[in-house]
Length: 117
Image (cartoon, rainbow, N blue to C red):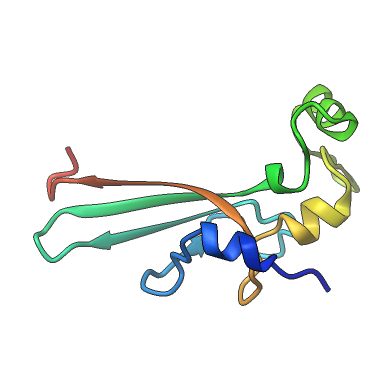
C-alpha cells in the first residue's frame, strides 16, 4: 500500500482536520478525482474549497504518460465499459479521493461575503 511521503506531508496542509470535505462524484464511482467543502465563517462570510486529485505528484510534466493522457483528454464512458485517461492504478487508486484514505490534492480555497459576492 502507498502512503504519502513524510517530506510531502510537511509541505502540505490537511484540510480534512477542521472542514467537512465531500466528494461530488456519484455513488459507486471508482475515480473520485474531485471534492469540495463549504463553511460559514464566524464573521458570516462563506469559505468554499475545491480539491482536485494531484496527478502531478505521480506524473512528471511532459513524461510519456503525461503526453498520452493529454492526447486522450478525459476518461469516457460507454454503457458497458470505460476508457481511462490514466492507468487504473492512478485513476481508481492513488489519485482517487476515497473516504478515510490519505491522498494528495491541489486545492483552491476562497472566501465570499454572506451574500456570495
